[in-house]
Image (cartoon, rainbow, N blue to C red):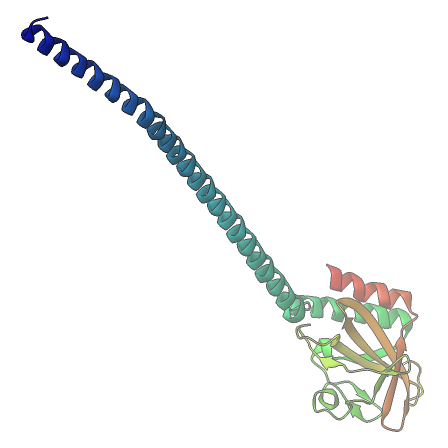
Length: 223
């Protein structure tokens, strides 16, 4: 074999060996690249899911807080309105005046009432003055129970017993046979209390048993 031919064979063998080595290296590195790309995709997907969950959780939390805040505001507002809202008016006062005028005529009795701009006098006790000056604080009893009442001609305030009108008068021709009526909004319900007696410094009341008087005041209050 000539020297020239030997060199050609050597060069060809070398080239084949180089191609084989390059092929081996390529096969070894390709799966790694694919694995890296796959891992990268999985990491990106996990990050997106985590971000979505955090966003959803944050939105839900904010919605809950907003709802709670709205409910609290509504409850506070409602509470405030219930405690201070005026539930009596000059129109209702005028209707009570007309009703009492007809009712006392029917009963053949005579009453003086705050609904007519007057100051009822009950055995020397003047209303509403002796009610507003504190003279009868802790001296008014509803059904034997000492009761705090408040003079409130428009029905507003936080008291559980708001007196919107007062009337006193004779229930017979005997000057010592008198009656005192308190027209009361008690826990947002109309009540009429009557006193026929006093005991020292205390005024004793019970709910009137006169159905016409009870229903008359209730109708005016509710309409």
